[in-house]
Length: 112
Image (cartoon, rainbow, N blue to C red; front, side):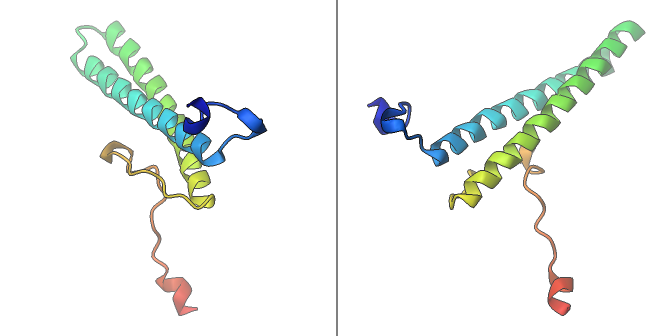
């Protein structure tokens, strides 16, 4: 059963697409958790009763923002690997809509 689900590396083979999808799930979860943490710390900063707690929350918010940025970068890479291997990356939740690069307007290229 482990071989069938891709959890076993029997015969020295591992499915790259499965690995890419698993990475996608990990990075998506990390990005969502970091965004949630950032939002919570922003709320703590806004409602802090004193300057010390506000500064602590702002620092934590910045840390979560950095984590979110890194997770989004890794998620974008996982999505690119899935596409390059002929797969279709899963739909993203609205909070992660900025992960995929915007579809550019190619009218200028077509005019050349």
